[in-house]
Image (cartoon, rainbow, N blue to C red):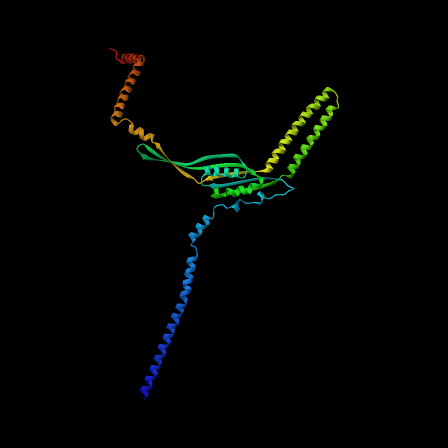
Length: 325
C-alpha cells in the first residue's frame, strides 16, 4: 500500500507542475497577443512621422516670400488730419531679372503707376579656359545679372502692388517701409504761399502810390523777386503734393549665378600648328648666323684706321726691341 500511495503523490505533483507551465505559457501568449496591436500602433505612428530630410525639404520649400512678408501698416494707414509720404525698398532674388522686370512694369501699370528707372547689369565673376582640341578653347564664365527699378504708384495702392509682385520673388533679402508724417511740411508750404501773396499785394500798392523813379524801379525789382519766390513756392507745393499722392518704391533684383559657355579660337595652338617646321627653322638659324658673321666682319672693316694704327705701333715696337749689332 505504501508504494502505491507514494506513486499517487508523485503523479499528483507532476500533474500540478504541468498545469502551472501551461498557464504560464498561455499568459505569455496572451501578453504577446495584447502587445502586438500596441507595437503595430507604434510602428504606424513612426511611419506617419515625417523624416528629417522631409522636414528639411518642407522648410526649404517654405522659404519662398509670402504676402505677409511684404505687409506693413506703414503702407496702409490713413488719417484725415495727416498727410504721409510713403517710400518702400525691397531686395530679392528672382528666376530671371529681365522677365521679372517686365512683369513688375506690368504690375505697376495695372495699379495706375509709372516706372521712373529700370536698370540692369551683368557682373562677370571667375573665368576659366580649357583647351578643347582642333585649335579651340572652351571658356566658362560665371556671371550674375542684377537690376534696379524705381516705380511710383498711387499711395493707397502701395500694398496691393507689393502683393502683386510676390510671385516674382524666389527669396526676399530685405525690405523696408517708411511713412513720413508730412503735415508740417504741408503747413510750411501753405504759409510760404500766403507770405508771397501778401508781398505781391504790398509791392503792388507801393507802385501804385507813386514816388520817385528810383523807388519805383526798386519796387518793380522787388515785385519780380517776389513773383519768382511765389513760383518756386508753387512748384515746391506741387512737388510735395505729388510725393504725397504717389509712393516711391525702389526694387533691387538679382538672380542666381549662372555659367556661360563660349567656344573661342586658340590662337597659340593655331600658330603652333601652322608655323615653320624644324628644318625650316634650322635653315633660318644658319642664314641668320652667317649674316651675323658678315655683319661682324663689316663692322671690323669700318674700323680700318684703328687697325692701321695698331699695326704701325706693333712694327715700331718690334724695331725698338730688336737688339743693336
